[in-house]
Length: 600
Image (cartoon, rainbow, N blue to C red; front, side, top):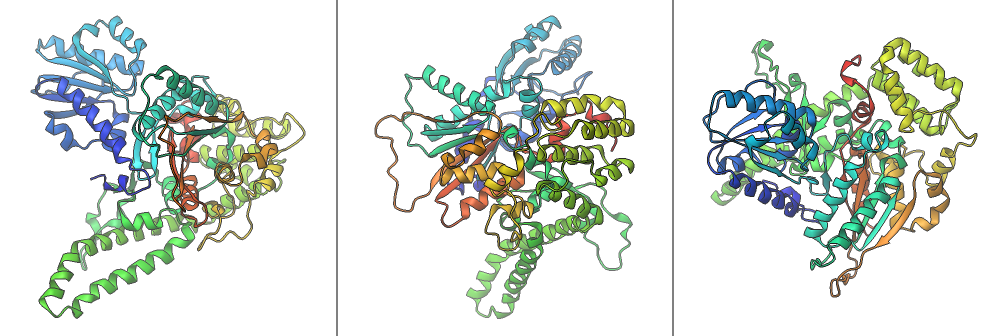
């Protein structure tokens, strides 16, 4: 089922299996038939660890979504609540338990907190008078979830907001814990590099946890050579830009959640000749996106302008394979053709799906609105007129375009100009509040706190120096056959990935000046390995680096890291971990107050 997790340099199936084992052990603690009541947010991440079949094997008969009022009826002995430690959820659980108690049912209640138990939540259950109704109160430590053969995410949506707005470092503690779990399975990581305040905190916590467990030496040969911890606020520009890879655009336009995307169904309807099209499906088409699908693995990280050619090449190969049947004369040849049929049919349906997805995306990327937006983004990135009010942004506000689109552009201008002149900033704020409503003053305040939209404090703008030193803008980026990571944004090389690239070769000492201009400290730590566990590297063997993005990473950045892993002479393979997979829209939304009341 999860074979694609073990294809890469690091077998991430080991992590998934460890998580499944713990889940089975907890379910077996509650003897008898069970119903699970899910905190809805957890169902997606859990789906990547365990399918319904695993739960069924352990006597889970029913599953419900956690909501107030009475629980649906179920003839089971145990009711297990799978929840995040949030106070508002405790109130709903209390309501559920009370309504059950009134029915005098002899059921056992259990709570599984994901990823940690919380004293506050237990206190709330006590105040509500239901704490004693629970037989088991436990925690299920689901920190890093394997999303693909080289990708782990904690799916901790509020991590950036908590760290930069609320000064709450809970997510950093979870990150450190997750990294300790990873080291327990894959060996101690000898070298740790980091940039940013959060990175420093995580490294300190990891080193402290290691000292606390000093007695239990890890005897596993290290799989990772290096860990690089990067704060999202070291590179605020990249998530704001529109991603231009195939996977990045799917996420920008439709949103990828827990490895699935929901698409408009019209494009996927199988229309037969002569049939009326009144029976078009209305349910969104749900596609799973990961490297288990051969074609997707091939095209996901390409610039979208190179996807059409790749799909037509694939179409020719598939139709040639089907033509082979005419050449199959002997029984043996026919038998061989038949044995390949399932694979060929899967390839054909995969091609049909991705051709439809590419058509949907092309309708948007060829529109004037998309082009105008991209032009302004690229002007900001190259430093054109970043210090005055932008007429395109003015027009978008006047037309009442989606607020998030406006905020992404204004923040981008601010980041590329190291803050806006007070007069320009006040003008934008006034226009936004008068057009979209004064309740957004809280959001603007949050964006300022996160350094995304701020007044210029010093007369010096460092961005041009950073851009030139790190070659963040490459003219004539080759989209078809890329030779540099800048292809993922058609010209802009993500700052975060340039830092990763320079660290591998020639090392950060060569860019000390630039590192000082970016927020937060940069550091290097070494972890002692038990004797006998030092890797003897074979000739030509690649090193493996785990890059951990604290505060979120975009699919375009992931594509850029995969590109670096595949470069002939890089000598480095990258595994990517993050607190959350993000794009500009979901990221800005996480910083908004009351985003649900926002205009569409």
